[in-house]
Each structure stands twice: as C-alpha cells, then as structure tokens.
Length: 304
Length: 294
Ligand SMILES: Nc1nc2c(ncn2[C@@H]2O[C@H](COP(=O)(O)OP(=O)(O)OP(=O)(O)O)[C@@H](O)[C@H]2O)c(=O)[nH]1
Ligand SMILES: Nc1nc2c(ncn2[C@@H]2O[C@H](COP(=O)(O)OP(=O)(O)OP(=O)(O)O)[C@@H](O)[C@H]2O)c(=O)[nH]1
Ligand SMILES: [Mg+2]
Ligand SMILES: [Mg+2]
Picture 1 (tube, chains in turn green, blue):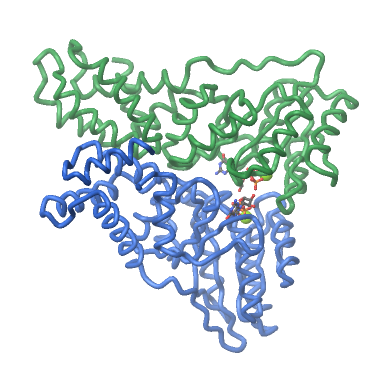
Picture 2 (cartoon, rainbow over the protein chains, first blue to last red):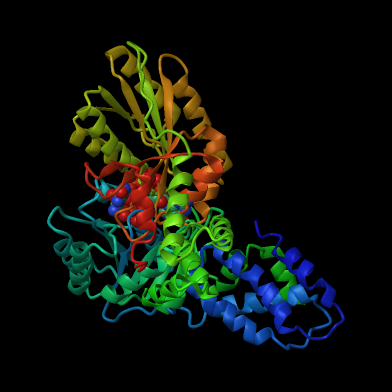
C-alpha cells in the first residue's frame, strides 16, 4: 500500500528541489505520511510518536543533499532511525561451561514456539552443537507428539514425560547432562500474559531449568497488542531476546519494532516459513525496509 | 488513562481541544482498528460536533460507540447456515493463516453442534502440520464425534472427499473440515484450498460456511488475509479467536465494514466451551476497555 510512500513524499516535498533547507512545516507534512506508513505496519502508536519526534528534530533545518530529492532524504532519515531502533546491540550467543546451554521459549498461543524450537535445534546442530529438544507443553492436544515429529525431522533427540511441565523441564535438563548434549531447548505451552496461573507456571519452569537464554516468540502479524504482551513476559521471565516468526507473509512486521523498543533486547532470529530450514539470524536493515514497505527503493537511497 | 479523562472533561466544557481527538484516535489505533477507518470515524464525529449536534465528551464517545455498533451490524447475518437433507450433509470449511485457532475452534463447534442435536463428522484436512490430525482426534474424542483422517503428507482434498462420502452414507448432518494453516500470499497453497472447497461441494455434500479464523492479536495484515481468502474461497464469516487476551481485535471493524464479512463466532479460551456468538455492543465496549472514558 505504501510502495508509494516515496512518491507521496515527492509530491509533498518536490517543490523544495533546489531550495536548500527543510522548513518545520515541510517536515511536519512529510512526517504525517511517515506516521501513516508506520501505523499501517503495526508499529505501536506510542512508539510511532517517539520515532516521528526523533526524526523531526533531525530533519528540521537540515541542509539538503544534492544527490537526493527532499523526499528521499526524509525517507533515508526515517530508515536510519528504524535501523537504529531495531538493531543496537545484537545478540552474541555464548555457550555455557559446563554445558548444557539452556534455552527457554515462551509466548502467546500459536505464535510458533514449537516449530521454532525444532528450527533452533536444527540451527544449533548445523553450528556443530548437540541439542536436545524438551517438550514441556502438556496442555495443548498433541503438542508433545508435534515436537517429537519435528525433532525427528531435525535429527535431534527429544525428551518429554507425562508428569507436569515444571517437572518435565527439570528432568529434560538432567537428561541432557546425562546424554552429554550441550544445548537444551525447552518448548512451553502458549499462554496469555494476563493468565496469572500460567504465567506463574512458566516462571516456575524458568526457575527449574535456570535458562541462559529466554526468548519470546512473536508472530510478525501481531498488531498493537505486541507491546503489552512483551512487557508482561519480560516482567515475568526477564527476556534475553525475541524471535520473530511468519515473516514469509506480507505483514510489514511493525510488532518487531514495538517490542524491541519496550523490551530493549535484541531480535535474535527470524523465521520465514513452516519448514525447519526457513530460519536465520535477524537482520535489522532488511526489517527496517520492510516496515517502511519499500525495500528496493531504500537500498538505492542508502547507496546514494 | 487519567490524561484521557481530563481531556474529555475539556471537551465537555465546550473546548474541543485537539488533544481530545488525538486521544480518541489513539484508543482506536491502539485497538488495531487501523488508520483509515479511525480517521473516517473521527472525521464524521468532528463534523457533527461542528454542526452542534454533539455538545460534550459523553455525547461524542456515545456517538462513536453507536456508529461502531451500527457499522458492525450492517455486515449481514451472523447466523450459521445449516440445512442438510437426507444423504446430503452440509460442510463447514475452516480456513486461515497459521496458528490462529482453526483446529481448536472445530473442536468447540463440534461440541456445540452435537449439543444442538446435530450428527457431526470431523475431517482432518490438515495433512501437513506435524501431529495436526492427532490434535483434531483429541477434540473429536472430547466431543464424542467421528473423525476421518488421512496419511501424513497425503492429499487433503481426498480426506475431505472421503469425509463427505462417509457422512452422506451414514446420515450425518454436518462435516466440519479442518485445513492446514496457510498464509494468504502463498499462491500454491491457496490453489490447494480452492481445490478442497470444490471437492467438498461436489457430490453429496454442500459447503454452507467457509469460516475464516482470525486471531484477535492480528494487526492490519488481517484485512489483507480476509481479502485474499474471500476472493479465493468465498468466506462467509469470521471466527475471532483469543479475545480472552488483551488484544482487542479491532481489525474486524474494517473487515466487516469494507468487505462485508460478518464475525459469527468468538473464541474466548482454550476449553471446549470457550466459544460464544459475536455481540457488537460487547465488542465495542471491549475496544475501549482499559481506556478511562469516565
Ligand atoms: N508461514 C509460517 N508458518 C509458521 C512459521 N513458524 C510457525 N509457523 C506455523 O504456525 C503454526 C503454529 O506454530 P506452532 O509452532 O505450533 O506454534 P506454538 O506457538 O507452538 O503454538 P501453541 O503451542 O499452540 O501455543 C503452525 O502451522 C506452524 O507451521 C513461519 O515462520 N512461517
Ligand atoms: N487463549 C485462547 N487460545 C486459543 C483460542 N483458540 C485457540 N487457541 C490456542 O491457540 C493455539 C493454536 O490453535 P490451533 O487450533 O492449533 O490453531 P490452528 O489455526 O489450527 O493452527 P495451524 O493448524 O497450525 O495453522 C493453541 O494453543 C490453542 O489452544 C482462544 O479463543 N483463546
Ligand atoms: Mg506449541
Ligand atoms: Mg490446525
């Protein structure tokens, strides 16, 4: 929808060509379009406000570069601001010694935790590690079976038992030690941030396995709710990072930006499909272009 | 929230401050209603304030809620269509993107329809996702209904076809057909879904409902989902799931308003009984929940 963002900005600012500086009024008008694009991309309404304010102060009175049109210049400023907001300190995984490195996945129902657990296991295996997958979702029908099948596909051993989630997680960690596996990935049931009982359960799972990394798994199609949900999970679990899923669709993925802003932890991985191979480290620059909905245009502008 | 109340008092006093409109806008945007719909709704209200028709904050908020309810109720009947004949079962097809709650909703609908005295059969038309049929089998057992399933990786159309044949032969009223989650942007998967629908409609069965399952946490992409599924398989209604969470599900406002697809059911939990009819007034109150309008 906003492939035309650039064109719209040209429309607004085109007359400035050759004038030198952006006035406050010019910038305001341009930022209205930027604001609309960010909201359309599901960036949280408060995060939009602070971003737009940040960009405004950069732009007012700025000398216009000759190589770029005023519209392109505004877009470049916003793009850089987005990369800054999405990136910053990126996650550098370190491995526990003594092993195992324990990884806990949590999130809302259906966000992609179980699939992501198997993708992560595959990824670690490809990095030369020996992961164990632990199925601690005893609630959703066939969740254990789902992870068992995916573990087989990932060629990674799998552990679960029909006891209770906290017990399974603890036993899973012990099993990894016994088998000499150096990474343990614990899948948990989906839960709502306002479900006090289940939030307490995941806190107890966390205490039982003492994870080195706790990741919140976030669906890229999530709207404004992403912020509150991430805040609540962070308050309960102290997150180390985020994993963004379902990026293979056409959702612009503004939730990534919102969540990164409120939690202040890096987006570590991005999932781009249902197959286990559809998974990679996260790239802030690609995400920034995606949120603005204008990938190709932006790479050209950034080169200018 | 406190700021909101204060600003509305300002409005009450006759001073129609810009900040007031911004806060109303923020409430709607924060509920995922989307910028286009929000702007149109608020522009309409501004017009009425200018015309002297709405004189204080309460009136503005009341008018906004009423307008939302009116918009939602204009989308058409929320009645689930069911009219099977002997040997001619009806089919309700459940479609949607990944992880929204299709399989769970089928479990809940099966329970409700059985309670209403219908003879129900489930079709495990998701042969792709790991353990999807096992998941549906658990729900079939809970609702005490029969399930037709195929081999993992098998042809989902064949599963649905078998289910309809079986339902016709055994005097079932209703086949609830599950499908694999698929993004609306995946051309080959959408083609597969069209085929499933055609197969379900061929022969003794008849597709009466194509229910798009939509997660309440979905943002503006929901409109795109609805548009594409509508075009591909003729969606007849939306099931809005996970409304028991903090997400407001506001994207159904443009979906109903622009596409005319009514929300027919609402999921409010993971249990078999956590499914209720859509109520526009309750939904609209929910949009403003947590926003202090007093
Ligand atoms: N298109 C796409 N689908 C995905 C991706 N990741 C997961 N899925 C699908 O999303 C759906 C839900 O994934 P799960 O892994 O079961 O999600 P979950 O968070 O474990 O769900 P619960 O355990 O029920 O809370 C499945 O259909 C997955 O195949 C992705 O990156 N892209
Ligand atoms: N809180 C809550 N959770 C729900 C609701 N409906 C479904 N869920 C949960 O959402 C998750 C996904 O549900 P599924 O029924 O597997 O979703 P699906 O659309 O069939 O998923 P795929 O087949 O993988 O595309 C499960 O953990 C369900 O228990 C609801 O109304 N409220
Ligand atoms: Mg799971
Ligand atoms: Mg399913």
